[in-house]
Length: 193
Length: 184
Image 1 (cartoon, each protein chain N blue to C red):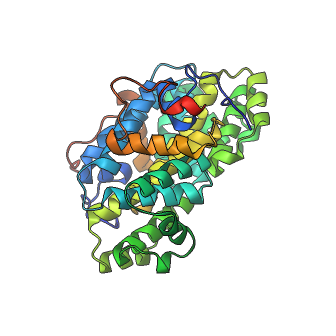
Image 2 (image 1 turned 30 degrees about the vertical axis):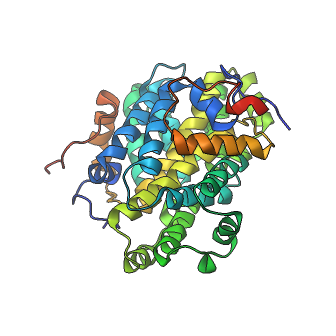
Image 3 (image 1 turned 90 degrees about the vertical axis):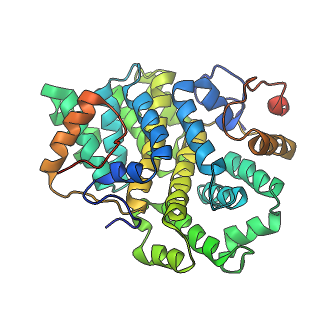
């Protein structure tokens, strides 16, 4: 497997982290958008919003993002079994009926915006989903269609060691998606590189 | 009608940003940095990549508005915009831009569809790492915008004439978030 991205970066960091550090002009607004969507005040829990991110990354076959957000779901109290249900058997997954309807919408957004039907939205509203919850579900799913393409389209380095993703998940829970003030170094979570 | 309660008669992304200004601010900041920041690619070329990807994602609003902005920025060479939308390989543009549009098209399908050969071909045509980066990120970003706009079924004018003033505004002012519904 490749140990370097398709383009020269100004750092040795893997996956999306290397890309965001390489280009703060675009990386900063992407980070700020993610922080408010996944960590801002919301009637959807952080676990529920991370489930949307993980499902979309899984459907896009982006292994870096799927590993990172699956580890985050688990660190927030989810489980590998829950993830497997969400990927393969949503009807019987251990989430609320409202979340099932929102995850259906997220799956449609992953295909294409025009794949979302009025019936998909009506089903979510019938389970009590608010306009903001529907909005945020669509935008989180769309944002991960950006991330997954950015990470794989530039062929970024993907660590194999599960411990790397556990450490990354820990940062995404304690610090969130904004850039840590001290920066991100190869002696931190990327020490497995 | 949009799937959620947004201001009436405000088209596309602008209606969504008025619904959710706290996320909209960052979306506009990203568009401004990516499409108007200093780079080797011109603003016209970057708008062309955005229109090309939006067309492939069947997003009529984004395709029409970014094609209008690209025509405006290309000026006398505006015909290349419709050539690219019609058949990119036959368009009167540089081999480098064709190679970058090809990478953007692969990214639009899936990040995994971009191959090392695609990258090498772009390099041989004179593309730098920065240009390859921008082609991938513009495509990825419009794969987000297109899904946001259509996934919420936002208002999409169908008369091409309505996009002309939008294109002029985007070319002249760049990406400034709307602050209130625009009176018609």
